[in-house]
Length: 412
Image (cartoon, rainbow, N blue to C red; front, top):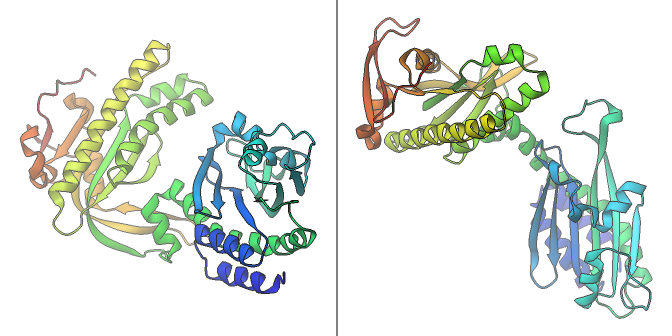
């Protein structure tokens, strides 16, 4: 076949940032229209995401893209990964590998090869295409000697009698680099968004990628501010080894994050042993947003209680968590210097949430809510109980604070 038209289509697809599934499906269909008889393709690449090591998908001639996979960093040494036909290629620097299934020769000890043979495939051919960028390994220093290169792995399988023809292989070898460039072009934005979202949050990542990057560029929005702080963390930090302290923080932050993000909240930053999150109020959904924020706070505390039980049973240090909830207008956007920016929320509402959180321990409460939050939380109002009026540091007038009804005071 003539590869020039396919290469041209791939180049245009990459320039237009065609979604990966659409790109792979279009590539597979065009290979078959050109007579290559490709029944199945596998496409995978590693990422820069701090949680996900690699992503891959499978394309089938009958169904298109029908399977997706994600491999966490903790799974990189799993049997599934070690049994991949690409494991040896990546380890030994092998760029191309072929395997026939319609001969009397014994198959290599690779489970997917036996699977392909039983489904009628006659040949598999795979490639590793390095991308060139260096991907720092999570948990390691970022120097070059501790980094791995980004790569694309690709395989094609056929059920043609006799396997792939010489001209088929020649065509694949010619267009694969262009396919890899197209995949790279369309995937880098996703990689960038995933990396930014891991550090900034999903909404800030989308805003930064869409061009909200100027210092001082911010918008005034109404939001529920959720602020957390580990009680007694300074004393723990003075007595625990560094690695154990980081592990403790990771355990507690894991309890805090998921309840927020599953309810459409944005985790904006970790501040030492605390977390700042916000739930945006859209139109007239104040009561619903307050209910979601309250449910998130309750789930966080339940998770922390369960974690403390586990840690104490294992003889590990445990601590309590304080949470405040407040609603008000905040400035949401870029703050910082001309060389270092932070995408966050600022304003009196954030300051008041911080002052309220500082009263959790004196009042013996794990969760405190402001008067403004209680007034806005119409759907949850019957679950809140007044704790009286209190003076917030830096705030001129006393304000009424609320806790959850039926919650016993915490001992300090």
